Length: 182
Image (tube, rainbow, N blue to C red; front, side, top):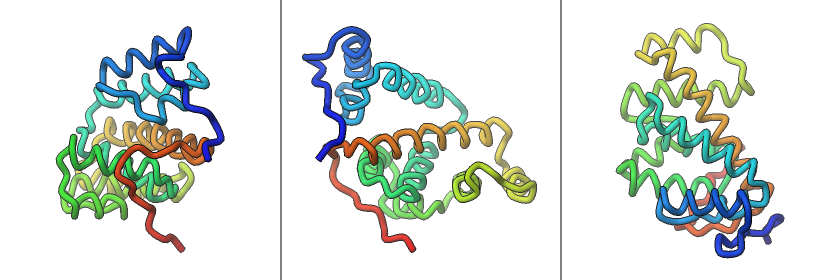
């Protein structure tokens, strides 16, 4: 059961109505997460703004989806795993093996693997990484802009993971369950 209600776009008022309409126009639909975020238009606007800003950054969609999958797996967010598996397959055109690798913070692509390793180190270190980790990323060709955007994508993904876990957002995507973690 959801801890927060979904705001139907047809019933939304004020800023929430404006934002949900904007989202529907830009992506063609309003995901359940956005309907639940509409309980706080400030949160919905913040998520939309950060998501849009990072989409215009240096990291391509396929890398951003890999990062989202790794973070959702780490945080055991079934909603985000389901959504990003769908997006990775249908938008970023990642194959099933690469989607599975991303869930383990790995990739067959060496540059994506370096970005995932950095993201995983930041996640496991709760934001703290040592100079060796950063140097390894740079040696693999990761740029300063990419390092900054890995942190930005982590913030975005942790926001959505935690929000959906707290809210108990109903999943409208083909369901994907987190792997068992020890």
